[in-house]
Amino acid sequence: MTKKIILVSAVALIDVDGRVLLAQRPEGKSLAGLWEFPGGKVEPGESPETALVRELQEELGIDTWESCLAPLTFASHAYDDFHLLMPLFACRRWKGVPQPKEGQTLAWARPNQLRDYPMPPADLPLIPVLQDWL
Image (cartoon, rainbow, N blue to C red; front, side, top):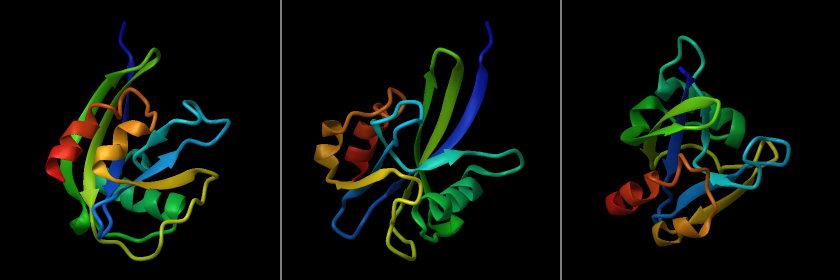
C-alpha cells in the first residue's frame, strides 16, 4: 500500500543561551498536547526554507531569512495514514520575540531537557542529532 508523502519543514530556533524553542500542539489538532519543533507543511511550489520563513511569521510572529536557516538533519516517519518527511533546520537569527499566534504553548528547553517533553514519534530521532550539534 502506498502512503501519501507529506513534506513538513521544521526549525530548531536556538537562543543566545543555547536553548531550543518547542511548541505544544493545541487542543483540537492531531497529536494535541505533544511538543514539537515549530514549522509546518510545505505548500506546492515552495521550498522547505520558504515554507519555514512563512510559518515562523504566521505561527510565531517572527521574521527570519532563508540565509539564516542551516540544514541540520531530517526525519522520515511512517504514520498510519501518511509518510512524513521533515527536514530540520537550525536558526540562531531572527527579528522579533516568538509569540504563540495559533493557540500553542511555547517553551525554551535546554538541549539536555528535550527528552522531558513528550513529542510526536517523528520528532524523537531528531533530539540526539540536535544535542550532539549543540
